[in-house]
Structures are given as structure tokens and as C-alpha cells.
Image 1: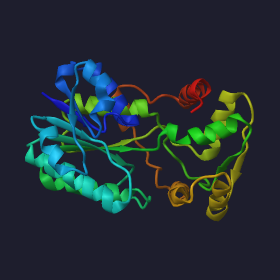
Image 2: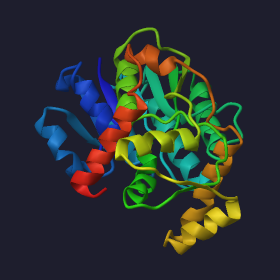
Image 3: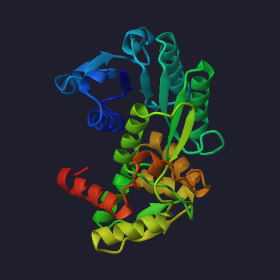
Image 4: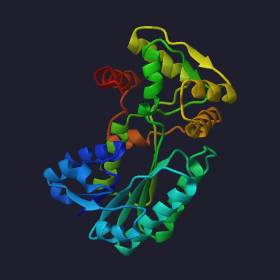
Length: 291
């Protein structure tokens, strides 16, 4: 059996590869990357490094050749670019007669009105149309997405949000990577959908735990979307990013990430990393590296 991970030098993909190497020999693993030179460390470990660029479909036939189980890590960008890239990848997987596709999706993609859901829903549908057995890994929100807010809190800034009482199932990338690795190497995951989430919490509950970790009070500043955008703009956030950030808060406020599920626990064979431990890891990382 040969497994291939796309986007293997990215933040999630690299962790999936690390998790896979703990359970399968390097010879059973290949990676598809846009810049093979960035994966020299994996090549040195015995992982087969292949050039694959979703914007260059001619590279994907060779990249996916002989692959049994494929992990497509979702790309990011405008909807047109995303769908073009994803369509190229799925078509190549079909031509290569890949036997199983796992795909990193988003919470409740088939029903949610969260701003990211519609593009993920379309990508899930594209995979289902191939008839290739699949598993959709619907990842909730990374703890790591909050690094900027945590950095601010560490130096005394308030936690600014327009998410209201909306709940999020924050989870470490590491947990999601291990879950993906277990799906790729395990049995019985054909035509499955997993809602992968940590414990659901409001912003106040997250910040309370953060305050415990920092041994100081962190103030939560609840604002409306317009004020939130103005505050971000005043803090130097590029204007191009503002709609995405505001839509994230709006989506959370409207329950877009609030799905109860123990799928992650089932795939891991353990509970997700507890919030206090997860925040401690991130605080330590920030302290050591500055990001």
C-alpha cells in the first residue's frame, strides 16, 4: 500500500507526515509538493518526494501514479482558484485509479452557512462524483488560528471579538494530523464523514482558560462586526484580510462551528488535547520563537 499526502510541507501536511512515519515505513509514503526542494528533509528520511502542483495538472498524473490512498489537503484562495485546483487534483486521482481519497473539509460542510462551507461542500461533491471511496475530515477551528490574539493577551491587550456567545471546537493541528494518519492507515473508513472537534467553548470560556495559563486576567471586548473590522484595520491588518476575519466571527456567532461530535476521540483512541494543555503548548511556542 502506498500513501500520498499533498501539501506535505504545509503546517497541517507536515504534521500528518510526521504522524504517518510513526506507524508506516518511509517507503510506504510519498508526498506531492509544489516545491520539492522544500521537502529534502523528508527525502532524507526515505519518503518519496514528487512534484505536484494543482495549478499544473500535467504534473499530477505522475505525482499520483501508483497511489492507493491519497490525502488531499484543501487549498486556500478565492472560490474560482480553489475549485480549479481541486478539480485538477480529483481528476488526476481518478485517472491514476487511486483507491481512496481523504479530504480535509470544514465543520458541517453539507449544511452550514459558515462562509467557508460552500466551497468545501462543492469539493466534497466533486470527490463523491468520482465513485472513489472517500473520507471527509471536517476539521473545526485550529487553536493555532488564535496565536495573534494570544500574543496580544500576553502583553496585556484585550481579546477583541464579535463572535458573541457562539461556540467553537478549537483543536490542535497535531490532533487533527494524527486523526488523518489513522484514517489513511486504518480500515473501515470508506465513504465516511468525520466531524473533528474539541470541546465546544465560547470566546469567554477560551479566554478564561487562557487567563489561567498566563496567571493573569484577560479582558474580553465584545464588539459588532463593523467595530471589529475597524479595530483590526487600526492594528495594521491588511484590508484584503478583513472580510475573511469578520466573516469568521460572524459565522461563529451564528453557530457555524457549533457541532457536537466525538468523532475525533474515536479516531484518536483518546480525548483531544485538553484546552489548558493546548494553550500551554502555544504559549510556550510563542515564548520560544516569538510566533
